[in-house]
Length: 218
Length: 167
Image (cartoon, rainbow over all chains, first blue to last red; front, side, top):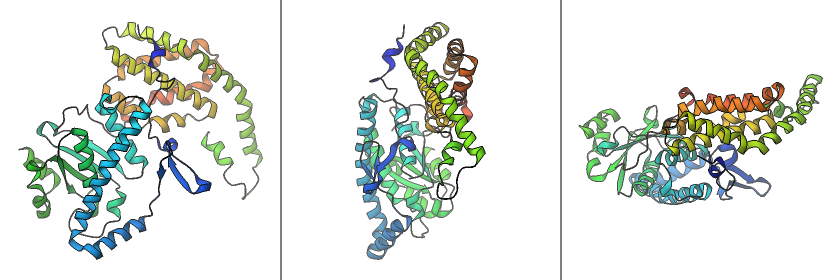
């Protein structure tokens, strides 16, 4: 028979670690905003993000996307490591022992609690080797300069680094829909670079996300 | 704390609380000793209550995998702990706020809903047997809030079935 006493982990029932009202706290009299582990958090003003984008555009022009993507890659790599550390500390088990559903739910909650928008994973095409990630209400894309191309280079970098580490494969990430271009959400396709080679030009031609996905999975 | 009560403390610089507001506060404070009694009882009897639920649930779902049964029992214990806290704070919405982005998704991902629903029935049987009608009236809104999260409509977004082996 199951003993319920054995179901407790150190007398606790680990659940929603990133629940916003417990995750974000701080020593406000010292001007410190912190997460529940005591790591420092920072509220970034929208105008500050806009200023960074404008500065980048002014100084580097065409290279802005590349710079942002590289920042995203660096961020994503560190974010993955810190995220795994926080989760395994809280659940008292290594990340390898997590069910994928649990791991991804925590990632979604983490994203939401940090105010980076609502992220979702669509796995309908994973049998064909593609993962679709959507983000609604991205603060980074909301601050981007007006352009005719998708503006989520930073997020594309984060997602690429995060999921490459999660799956243990060198993935690439291409954005196919963008809130800055009037889409209801930002859509990103992740997969092996060799299989996504054609996608950036299709996006430039203005093909829709669904059409691109159909072409990839045909 | 109950958001209506919480809001009473928001604007001391604006005005003094009126009679109705003070009555609200008195009513809550008056109910606190009973809330604490029930809370203490739940704290002390948690394992006994949940073990009785676990034994009955295991009989009812004799064919189910032990891992899934354990998961359901953890969900149930969590529901009871959150409901107990909601009872202290007179705030069943606390249960929803903390669990709504998590519990429905875990229930959907592991497909434990029938067992979770059966667990709630067994848990209610245990609790109504141990508590007076008045005590159950204080606790039940929190339990009901947790139970409502089992409804697939409560799911805010989807985490698909385990992605193991993806890509």
